[in-house]
Length: 106
Length: 116
Image (cartoon, rainbow over all chains, first blue to last red; front, top):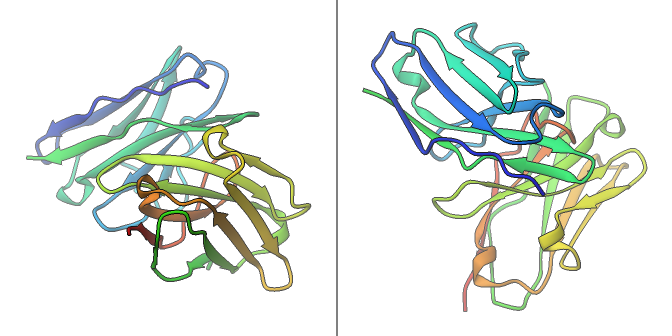
């Protein structure tokens, strides 16, 4: 099965823009999804189908795709956005998660 | 609102089996599949498999084939995940989630500890 690669960590100051990337050979053919997980909590879907935002997710969360890389962008980062973020993709054989990126708000 | 509520924490000995339940509410149960994902302590998310709540079709992660069984009870809108021949590295929080391609929402998680 294929792999999805994320940077282990990203740091940003409040109010700045955070970009978290996810790379994988299957991404040009398959949609990507993003989840936010805070300590001790279950993951929450923040982006689906590369760039769609579920209801209730703040507009500062956005997603984009280019070739083998998808990017989660958080504009105007707030302290409450500090969390682990996971990308995910699926095909007929199953689902793969990226290794996760810890977003630190300085 | 859509909600998935899982059964409580379990402590099992190596070689035993565990069965975790996931009760759905707030939507038509048979219109969506249920996926299972686990997370070992301090580690990332690992997909375990999926079951269609409509017809019971399943798709399991290759590394768990032969040890995992996922079922549903449509009369109670409940999904189940059974893992057999438990090992210490099966210690993890086990999550159910609605959906097969993407997962939303998730249950609160069930901690399964495997220890002698």
